[in-house]
Amino acid sequence: MPLLDNCAVVVVDALRATTTMAKILEAGAKGVLPVADVEKAFSMRAENPELLLGGERQNRPLPGFDAGNSPFDYPETMVQNRLVVLSTTNGTQAVQRVERARWVALGSLVNARACAEAQRRASDQGLVVCAGTEGQLALEDVLAAGAIVSYWPQEFRTDSAHLACALYNRWQDDLIQGIRLASHAKTLIDQGLEQDVDFAASLNIYSRVPIRQSTGWFAYL
Image (cartoon, rainbow, N blue to C red; front, side, top):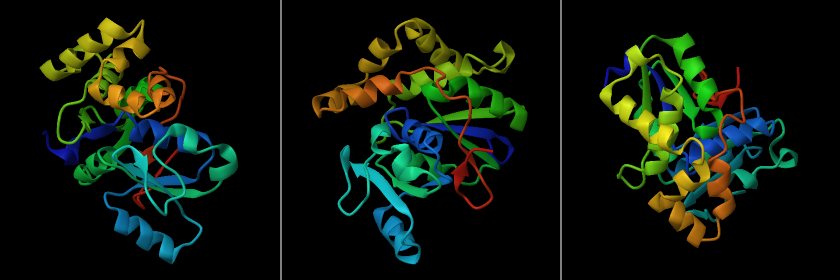
């Protein structure tokens, strides 16, 4: 991995954490904080009872939390002007792994163009980090990374960026079908979460990007 101090990093967990966190902010939340472990989330709410807790393990909402990891768990009536702490199996762990980076944003298909533009404004060295699924490369993350990379100038693309872009180019006219090829998408569909999978395939429906603030919280600027 390149030196994070010099990179504008976008973390991608298309199914579902970074898609969901973008949706949370679009619904009017003041900020969202990805945390790796459940205990930290509970301890934060003990200090501030107004916090909303969301997240999952094995794709199921966590006991004692207010919501799960579905973008449909966070209507405006619930999150407007609230702070949301999210803990998930893969995505929030990936955010923690890049905490040393000077600039971090959350990306997915829903805000791919905005992510690429924000990266270019932040640094001439961009990096997309795919969360994967339980330590394995995930097709849906590479697909979303390819969408982001497709807005980079050709001369800035590494071999891995070209590969991601090639996957995106293959499925850009039918992203739902492309994302449904992913093993994690199939698992979610089997668990009745087909709507989440199809929503994650929505391209550029958001024009803003969750960016990490000095407090560690992600918000819209």
